[in-house]
Each structure stands twice: as C-alpha cells, then as structure tokens.
Amino acid sequence: ITGRGSDKEVYHVELSLKGSGITYEPGDSVGIVAYNPPSLVDAILQFKGFEGSEKVNIKEGELTLKEALSSYLEITVLNREVIQRYQEATGHSKLKEVVDNENLLNHYLYGHDVLDLLEEFPSELTAQQLAEILRSFPARLYSISSSQAAVGDEVHVTVSRVRYSHKGRERSGACSSYLADQIEVDSLVSVFIEKNPAFKLPEDHQTPVILVGAGTGVAPFRAFLQHREANNQKGNTWLFFGERRFHSDFLYQVEWQKLLKDGTLEKLDVAFSRDQEQKIYVQHRLLEKQKEIYAWLSKGASIYLCGDMKLMARDVQKALLQIFETEGGMSEEKAVEYLKKLKKEKRFQTDVY
Image (tube, rainbow, N blue to C red):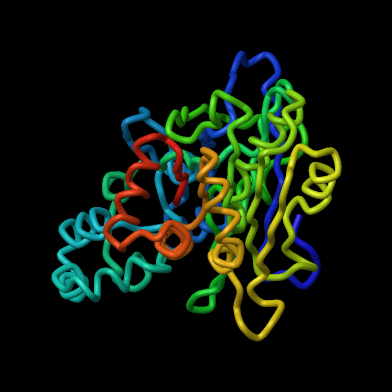
C-alpha cells in the first residue's frame, strides 16, 4: 500500500477466520506463526554440508533438520544466548572475545543472522548440535488493523516488510517476508489472538479520543475507526498520522478521507518528515495544536499512542508534557504527575514496539 518512490514496503494483509471461531476486539494483536525464508534455510544447509534430511530432536519432536530450520528454529536474528551456546559448543576463541565484550556483542547482534555466525566463526557441528544451539522460532505479534463489527470473519494486519542488504547479502524479516512473499490466496496461515485490555476504546463512545500513530503504528486506529463507523459513532475522534512522504507513504489515505467526510473522524493532522527540508514529525503537529489538544483533554479526552518505542513514543510524551506545562500552567513536576494520572485513569494508553 506504499506507492512508487517509497523506501518502505508496507502491505495490507487480510486473513479469513471463517469456521475458526476466533474473535477479537479493536486494540488486540494477532500472533502469526511464520516460516523462515527458504533461501536462508538452503544457504545454511549448503554451507554446513547438510542434506537437510538429517534427523534432529527438538521440543516439537523428531524432525528433519530442514523442517526444523524452516518452521521451528529462529535463524533470521541472533540473541546473546544463541551466540554464547555456539561459542561454548565450539570453543571458538575469536567468538569468545565477542561474547566477553559487551560493546562487541551488542554490535554483532545488530543485523547478523545464523548464517553470518556459521560463516564468520566456522566450526564442525552435527545437525543435532546446531538444533540445540538455536532458539525456538517465536510467533510474531501484529496490531490488528480491523474491527469485526466491520469485516466479520476476517482479521487485517498492516505489515512493513523488512528487507535490507548487509555484507553483500539480502536479508529479510522472517514474518514480514512470509506474509509479503510466501503466502498466496487460499494459503493456510496459523494465527492466534493476543488480547490487549490495556489498549481499548472508552466504553462511552461520546468520550473524545486523540489517536497518535506513525507508520504502521496507525494499524490499531484503523480498527478503532472501523469500529466507530460500523456502530454509527460520529465525531469526537482526532487522528495524528506521521510518515515520510505524502505521495508514497500516506497509508489508508482514501479511508481517512471517507471517514472525515462521513463524520466518523472529526479531525486529521498529518506529518510527512521528508517532504520539506526541516523534518516534521507527529510531535511537532501536536505542539502546533496544543491549545486544542489541552481543551480536548479538559473535556475528558483519552490519548492513544502507537508506534516506535525508542524515538516516536518518547518524543510524543515529551511534547505532551510541554503542552501540559504551557497550556495548563503546570510546573515540570506537575506535568509529569498529570501524565501519570492520565495513565492511571486509562486516559493515556500506548501500544509501542
């Protein structure tokens, strides 16, 4: 759903739940059980000289090594425990230097996968040893971007495909590449619902809500707005959306315009960081509208925030504290207390990753 010229690949994926009995609410997440990229599985087998038919015992039972690497073992990313287990099993002295140095270890964890580890620190391993070193392949959680009040027996997700080159080899995110490249119409996908009681619309639909999302962080707000539209709940909803470029990255633009037109969405403010020399993010739009935001809060509005934990969430919270100080005449300490009060009253809810 990103356009030509975007440096991201964002996909809208619709999965049928027909006959499953699965239900969910706006704000919940869906867990997706994926398969690893076949090219990476084959590259690991080839490099180690394995056929793939070797039998290994893992917690799921006895499988071939290829089955285990494809479906049950994490190979697209590394963690400390895997690197430590590999070093202990192989006795590799150069890798010991990495394991013993926090900075080197943190640097190595970023952007490297299991094939890198095997290539850069070669050692003889049996298929069973390799399987025991690797960790289980966890399901990936995605914020649901639909409401069953609107779509019935379906669940929608908004997925940013992870794809990058490192050391001359293309890398992919396990689940995002599975959803973008491996599944087709009528493919069977294993899913489960992860309830999120800490990210729910107010019970009283008259309560004003301010929704702040950047990138795929807008996903749960599509669910919120679908729910309000399906239940004919008009107004009192303000969306702040941030991305890089208007022409290529305005996710769900037509839907937001339709919701504005029918009155479900009362206000929409957008920030496109790369469309001008000075980068503009959602927190800048919040500060521009600080008087209105504080007025909405004074009327009992709830704020919802979804997006990147490290930067976006931190910067939005800073902007809110600034608004409380400027518009509410609060000291820095009082502003922090007010934000804590909003959290306690479930009037400031976050879904960050």
